[in-house]
Length: 281
Image 1 (cartoon, helix red, strand yellow):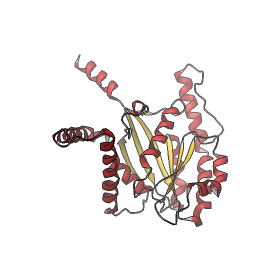
Image 2 (cartoon, rainbow, N blue to C red):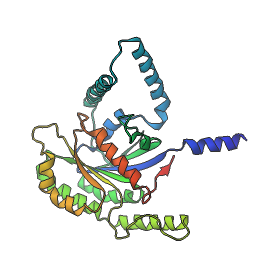
Image 3 (cartoon, rainbow, N blue to C red):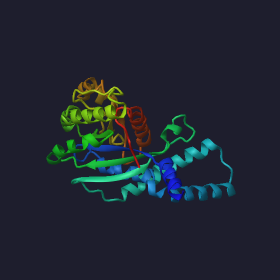
Image 4 (cartoon, one colour):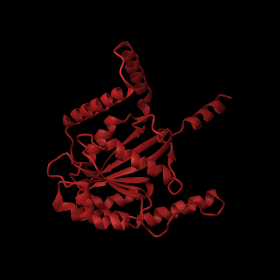
């Protein structure tokens, strides 16, 4: 009886896990992005501690002056922006050689949003891979296991925009996607008795969402989003328009646009799970 109850509890508490690659040229801000995400979201093993802290904050808030809900939320967001950015600026972040990994428990930034219920019970496992040219040939080893890609672009490094474009095109057309699509098709056939479910292409093109982040938008020399979309990356937008992709402006260091960008990606991961099923942890 105990084993049955334990098994049922384990099944009930399992969370969908999506594997996300963080890619981009060296010095684009990939590892800084990962470090900031770790500050913004709790790890799955630290949820009870986070919930305890939240309850303490709520109880202490009741003893103080009453605040309007919107004012309180705005104040909390402003404090988060300041505190996480300040913490990050004190860290010494070294270039990644190989990979960094971390897993977070994803939560909607607005708990009252209609999308908040869709974001429940989701973990994101990030793989931050080194962006040096000598390391990029190893990226494709992870394509069959990933559910989504975050590609970080240094929007101040205009001399390397063409290199960014060519790297993204190489990612989208890598032969590994053909293997990934074939494996997914075989898995689906086994599950539905030989009838392939879902709209899974077998043409070798990328079959997961790609979130492109134009980083360092807080700097005066940064190229704005409109100029990026109408410049070198206009070809990329047209070539990836058949895939699930988006280019968004962010400042990783200043925590500008991070939550909103990640929520777009998670929405697309959920939408794409009939093609690329999550793991359950």
